[in-house]
Image (tube, rainbow, N blue to C red; front, side, top):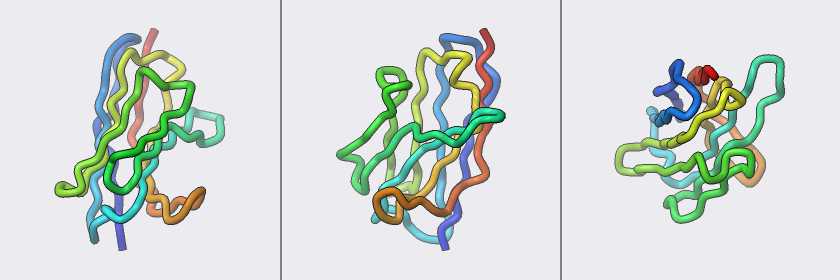
Length: 118
């Protein structure tokens, strides 16, 4: 059983950067694509980024493209989301998850809160 834990969130000002981490325990997730989602208060969870098994392919949602990147370190069983030039609309709880197959996600972490003040 894979368990994921996000960290690295916090309260920052607009224009600042944060790097979120997602670490896995239980077993390796190196054979899976991984995703980042976020959920703002009162809104539906929305896709942020995807990275394939070996990190050679990433997909970034257009709303954050050019500001956010994702990477992974399979040796460390870790996933990262680098967020630059943060905006107040990026305020949300950020989650990582395993993509079991295209469009199917599981093993959600507890999330980490990112709050961006203007």
